[in-house]
Length: 236
Image (cartoon, rainbow, N blue to C red; front, side):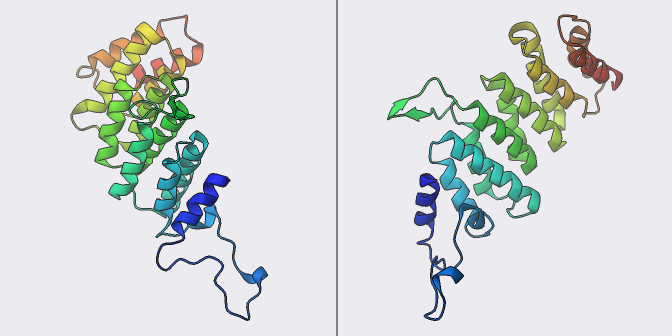
């Protein structure tokens, strides 16, 4: 709450914004209270407020800002093609990877913000832009956290953009790595779920077919995961 109050105080010095202004006849009770929620709803202040929250370095504030941004995208409160919006989400997806969290002035190597990056990947999927597509590809292949890679794959599938088969190739590679090294069931399931949304070529996407067969035949995996692999194969 202290962080939110500081953010509000800093932003309300902008021209045309006033909190607590009232005529001599108005009572204090009639003056509208400015909250973080009402600032989100302002087309002129929503993005700066969310950006300020993302830059606080607080994980909880960053997650809250991304949740607010997702809500604004759903309601049409922000333009998904706005370069500033993409820059905000890209910043969040870099948290803990390119931008390390700090604790008491020192690098906090125990918290590299996977939850923030999961929400950032989800938000990129909602933006629906070519830039979001490219950045999600990078997260699928390079993020150190399986849950982030899985969410990035799922978000990439929602974009419906796969010129040249780059998305299918990246998701297939991610599943192969998890199957052979990481064995993270959640990431593999997310990857298979993403693949099931694409129109796959049984010949052109041969590597996808191979890894789906391997997962389907691996009885060390839970049944739900093997059934998802069978679903991918059935759609080829």
